[in-house]
Image (tube, rainbow, N blue to C red):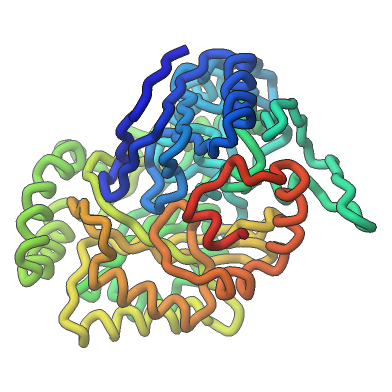
Length: 450
């Protein structure tokens, strides 16, 4: 087991860093238990770091950091499930699934997170017909603060006072507060194939048709290009394998478009760096990128090729989930556009627009409601301070009672979080039983959950 003292850790975006007294890379579950018992003996707090793809300070610790990068093996795979260690990266998981002609029903767009990190923070794709990645969890194996193993499945109950609470609903998105996830079993389905129709529409036309499209297509997402009043829409539906095999005759995706896609990060990164010092450049950059890189096309591929994106440009991201009742999500998106254009602030493309089906995980932004997500980013921005354009976004999301993505930037108070998540008190009760001394905590979590 790798051990280091006074270890300096940065997240991927490099907007957060910490120096931990102790850093461990355990290889086995017994070594993980050893670290947990060491923390208990010395009254130290632990946070687990995955690939650092959270933009919030959720993984920070000045005491003990644990990385599962050496604990990422495949445990078992069957016709409708896969079990892996918590530190396996999503791109490794996807490669194994594809090799075995399997898939998950939905994916997060980025493939660099660890499995444990992705499920713990509520990573999601974009579909009104599918839940977040955590919705596929069948079983979790967790090392709790006592150093004991807890096996949690969909039927697991925990007695809290005079009531029994569903442990799966609490643990499926737990922000790492119940313990260290050593193994995950995910429900799978056969590998499937997709056709993605991609086109540019006016912002107002998108608003008018967005709900109809989300109901019609299995997967729908959109990238709004601020200051252009244009939206790039992805409408994705399943196709038979026979159609997939004939893709060369159906696909409208030129060699030139493919080459531009391959070069997009390398060509645009210098622009983003320069525009952070001169935001008057951003409208022209957004317009150029829309016209040069995002030309209409029809792509055909397997689910991994169509739904997963290899992101390489560092950025900071904030994302909130909005209720779709009473067109709340449409009103919020339109007001964000109008406020942004009148404020003088500028935002890099893309503002990411996605959907997720309602789910039962208590800390999910999609808890008990179909959800529309708005995610904005500032690329090549590495400061800890919230960017002014992002502050405008955060303020607006409060007005619409939007729920934050835990792995991305937000600024809600404890009271605001309690108003947004109706089962948070039940979550706290379970946490008090599994981790009474708050071993798996930090200041970010303390401010909200204690």
